[in-house]
Amino acid sequence: MDRRHKEAMLTSCFNQYYDKIARYIYIRLGDGAESEDLASEVFLKAYKSLDSFKERGVPMQAWLYKIAHNLLVDHHRKQSKMKIVHSENDLEVTDDNDTMSTAFVNVEFTRVLESLSRLTQEQRQVIELRFFGGLTSEEVGRVMDKSSGAVRQMQSHAIKRLRLLMEKQ
Amino acid sequence: MAENFDEILDKCIDSIGSGDSIDDCLARYPEYASDLLPLLRTMTGAQDAVTFEPSAEKKQAARQQLMSMIGTQKSGQKRSFLSTFFGKTKVWAGAAAMAAVALIAVYGIMPLLGNSGTPIQQGDFALMISDDPAVVDLFDSVEVTIDLVKLYHSTEGWQDITPETNTVDLTDIKGALAQKIWEGEILVGEYTKVRVDIGGIDAVIGGVPISISFSASLVIEVPFQIIADTLTNYVFDMAVFNPGGFSYTVDTVPDESGPDQEFDLIVAP
Image (tube, rainbow over all chains, first blue to last red; front, side, top):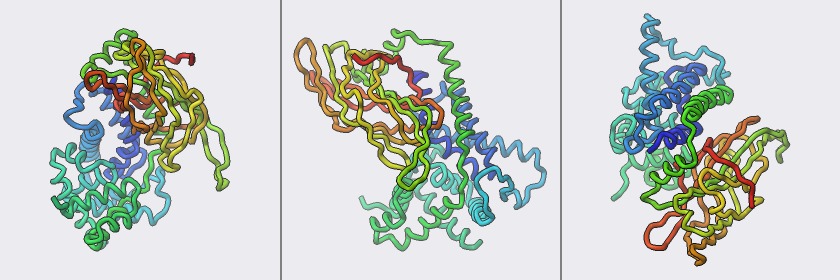
């Protein structure tokens, strides 16, 4: 696959996945503006690494989510150096630049975030990629290096647990 | 082999993601309905709680930044017609294909009122056809008749377009050349599919008519965004494949399709 072909795929993926990747990041950050910036960075980083992308290995959208995941890890690492103390309040959304304008929505969002934070890392990632990233189980498997069957099994467990956690709150 | 619950739940999640309701899923799997219902409600409840939508301005800025990087690279390695030709030949050597490319250009807006009285933004739209010279040189002519073009708007559904020029000869539009077949206004927003309805293909090699099989509707699912005051180009790429012998068939080439493809516009004969 030549470079031009990859560039065409990347621009197509931008149209299809920019919003979803921004939402996937938002679930982790809770900050709209930061999520948009990081989503943009995903595509710029992908462009710079385009030569390393091999179509037969991983679908491009799964590759983009891997980049997003790595950027989130870096972001949290930088944040943890800056913030010595973490509290439950970190989950609350205080930035009003996004579309969450009502207290009810904030409460619901916080409830979801807190429930997600109580899942295992892998369960959480499956839910985030499936529900908010819009990937198929097969694609999630490519991101997480799991079989689609393993993803489906994790997904079932994760939703059952998420349900219990959300009901408790 | 019977589906297990995890697979059924997974299918329901996919179908709800594609626009089905929870009830649609439960109706498909009535024996699992009581188990599926609370889990699917948990999913939709979690999704509904996340109302964040990236701003159109930020998205456009990010897109322009990406396109600018791609453009910078391209201007540094401007490709000649021959390099385009040989590049594509290498890609399609195994398929012995020729490609037809339709380009959609969209720009500008015009506020209108819909049936409900709600203002509707529209953008101009142009559709063009081109092809790859790899195989088309074999032909004296390959006239493709396009009856209808349909664009799938993510919220408004299919939008019909009747081409102004409904017949293109692929031998007239080799390589990076493209022919416009329609221009007009369409709704702004996200489009996920472009469908081209083929009325017929008349092909001739060495003065002898050659039959080319084709699907009545060719669909490419490469999404594109129509943004107010912004020109968008979309390439619809279809190819005539030679599976063997003297048989030819037409199919889409999604990897070669989508917005921002390069083309040189020709005037229709």
